[in-house]
Image (cartoon, rainbow, N blue to C red; front, side, top):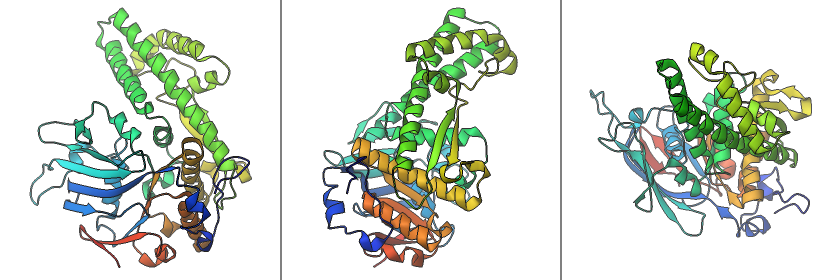
Length: 412
């Protein structure tokens, strides 16, 4: 059900108040509720071959540690651009036979519902392709990974993200970029083009035989793509902060800002002027960048590949990195839920959520609040955990599977 004031779904905190056949679900019939209704893994991690057909409802995977639960979520994470939730090398994802060091070629295939008509999406690493990841949509090969974002959107939380607010800026930047993918499929292509130009510029500066025309062309690409990347990040961060504030969720609201040169300029200047400034800054920093072996060392500010996402616990006006471990976990859950609400209100598109061992770290009140918000939004959330009892409130709303030594069986 949507609020008359801001258009975002109202959130309830009790599973008893979420009627899957009532007004909440009826108001979502016009929305595109993305769901992986069939997932097939071939030689992926510990799985030789497995197929799940969960339908569009939430999914709960329970089993012992090391049974293969997270591997299923990782497979789903490969259905959007990027390196998956573990950021693994493609050559490390394939299943390994006993005594064999080389991994097999692997594949993830899925049938996605939620757009105009169901679509079949596949990705993987085939024999003889080196480190190149292949993508197919309805059997047709795709030139770019960004095509995945046109058919699927997913946000995730994993135990490895618990230090997101404490470690360096790289992981926070990647977290933000994954959120942007869900709203702007072209964002992935811009980042790829920017990073390619960045690497080529660094190589050219350190080679000694510099081609000034080619160097200027690379810096032009970095300026144009970098401005577009910064604008997309800034736009989503601003909208996401609004989505955090416009809810009665039990998870704390947060304030978001981006520490970046281009993002700061975009707050005050037209996009074309920001491009010109980036272009000029890169040119003047060539000497120091040559000595440092990178880009941005001669620039007073963070370039797009160095930008940082700054998160503040709004009720406490406290930087996320200064909050307690429990508060940081709550902020992360709140951010992911806010991204889902924003996608619903602004895009009419309900993303898939991949929540790895999240429920175990929440108290009963917040655990039930999480389940209720997922159901109220109509998300297909994939939960993992070792204790099936934690997910008992979802018994009538989700498809349950038990995972045991790479064997996945439906729990009735």
